Length: 473
Image 1 (cartoon, rainbow, N blue to C red):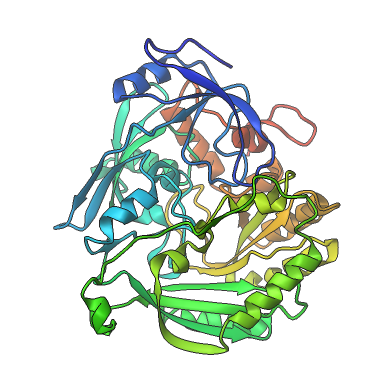
Image 2: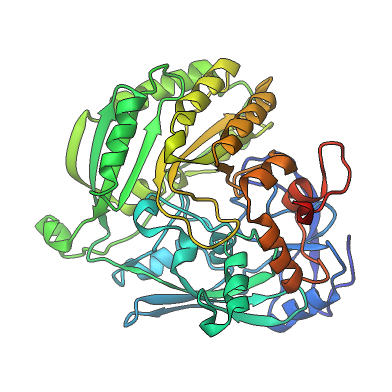
């Protein structure tokens, strides 16, 4: 649904999609130049007509709205570092890449970073992103001290996690964290940083021959390392893998030559994928060859290797447009979280993907610590597995639907920022606080002007295509 734009604002109709390049949608894209222009835009909007969008790194349909208006915020680019308090205030349109280039040379690091630095501050909060340190530091929302939100009435709200004595304000804050941009348009945030003395990470790497020993090693690593992540060979029946753990290297551990510039930081993209790749290039045979090479490349045991931040935290950012390797049909990422006692779903999922012939060269296993108060935040204590698979694999959706049932039955859930296909029933079962969130959303956006293709899929449509509201439980 389109509507008249404020004076002086222009729009561009584009076909947009998530990073998985599935389910593209034509939408009108606007870029407000000021807070006043954004406010005019919001106040002029009819119901279910707009959604904010960052850099498009949600894998599915969270930041798109077919036939609607998509708001981008590159003009909201203020960055202010307070070195004394160790906090940073940034506009919602600022990317984590921009922030890192400022704060690392100043002796700070992000409290949480996902697998790509090409994410905006607004997107990081809306998806409540997590990283390799969730078992220690939680997700991004845990570190936000204050945020400014333009709600669905065009009112600018200042929200804090405690609400400064106001329960409703705190609930609005936590409804926005992980709320996928559906409580209002985030315009600015202040969050805490991690102090560092060098830009290097001290890394320990261990190779495991099977999944059981790998998962045992990950549990043991929880108490030893701030950062840990495992790559799993999805095509190996034994589930062999590589565990990588690390901490920020202190300046005194660096070689003398490096101590002269301990906070040097200059990440670069090393290559770019071709604009078009044949759909069959990524298949079981090519992925098997890649996985074999990746596993053999890793040392059986190596301790104290000093790595630069970019390859440790954001290895795929080194290849521009890597999502094109899956061909024109795109890909899905299946990422779930389950409690510790449901660890058996990790090997079961890998086996199901092998059986249907869904090759994944990017299969990542991580540990989660305690959840935060956000009703739609993804992490729960236990395990999270993420597997990228080509979308065109025959029978894939049926297999994933069956896996969804196992995940929900175990008390788990699917990550909304990565999802492109879960059903409304799955969403309602796996996010038990969705009704509370929806009540708070109704208060913040009473006219329901905010909408997305994700919301349309998990809220308003049941399997028969009939209207269905979250408040029905």
